[in-house]
Length: 377
Ligand code: SF4
Image 1 (cartoon, rainbow, N blue to C red):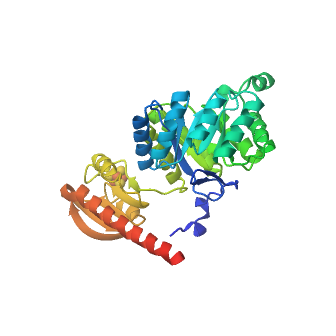
Image 2: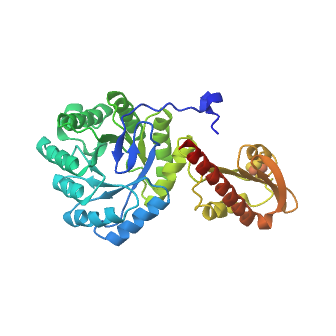
Image 3: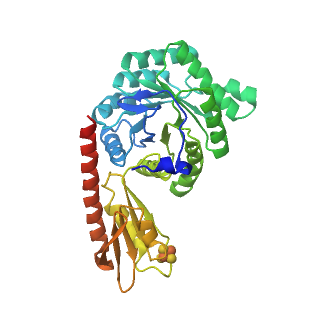
């Protein structure tokens, strides 16, 4: 049960945006903030691309984007879309004809880059294809590929130039009676991206796709994304997110979820609360948490688990979690269930036992959710 009505300091007031559909997935309005990623396989290798899309979907990706740089990619897209468990966004740069082919192949959304899609007549052809095939469009402005006239006007990539680029393309879409679009203004610089997104959020009610582009490797990119996206999400800006890492796309999905989970904006799987450990620990906290993270990856039910090395913080954290373990002395610790002290357990049995407790709790929570769902019908 959410207690946010008595904890106003936890509330995030989301900017009101229009809702669009990316295939079967709503984006914007009161829809949950979606997590996206992008494949890095050769798109024409259907088997490898579908396998990566599936792995990303298993990790929780709501939408997956696929680059379609050539005709062999757009040809492969048809089969990829047919086998994908989630809607596919075709990523288009330079060649507007690839956008038309991708729409024909069943892409749920076309991402076009205003900086390289070319003249307005080409955008109009893309809009027609999107209308004919029921696709939405993302206007994907990027600080690194702004239109020449805007760079000449502003001298360098800046928030004003990025927003102007986006708004120019919104006008083209709206002039052609096309409204199923979302928009992004990405930059690798956190300050630039944050300023651009804030201006954009005031200038349009379109759903906003958030991203810090080319954020870096797994550790540095995660931190940069958490700061950039985290601040914007905290302000209520953002309807769908993509974390860009030089890493496996599955990692992008995990990081995206962790950012949303940290802000209470999305819940999926086990939220492990664990201490950093120190000389007081009653068991090896770090190894235990690593083992539990791996063993509990299959749990999708939102729930919490506290794994705390000793009684300094263990009982207090366990009060607020579904399952808890606090280290004690002589090779054993205490298990907490629903915030209450339950039973003693030896450290040697702990991982297997906690996994079983979490699985049991997940089943109970799923049954409650199913019963509530039926009662609401
Ligand atoms: S909870 Fe205990 S073991 Fe963990 S860091 Fe704090 S004092 Fe150390």
